[in-house]
Length: 73
Picture 1 (cartoon, rainbow, N blue to C red):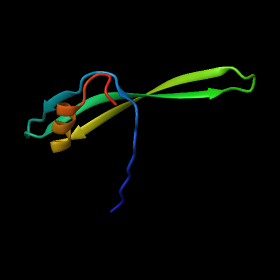
Picture 2: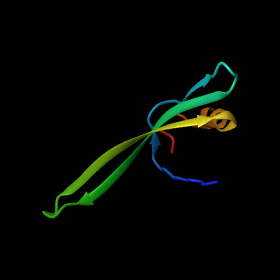
Picture 3: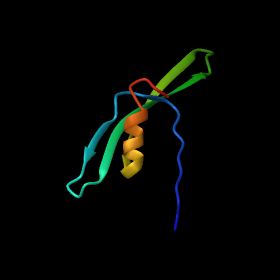
């Protein structure tokens, strides 16, 4: 079995949306914004935001909905 693990540290852009599948399984979706700041070759400060869409299933979906809110880390 292969396992991929990713850590995304940013701010939640909106409250998570909890839904239930017809089979009764919980699923939630939310988006996280991450920022990147760097200095370009001319010495000017640059900033870029990137958005990541996240889907969580089962118990993890319920916990995410309970503890995450817009703006939280």
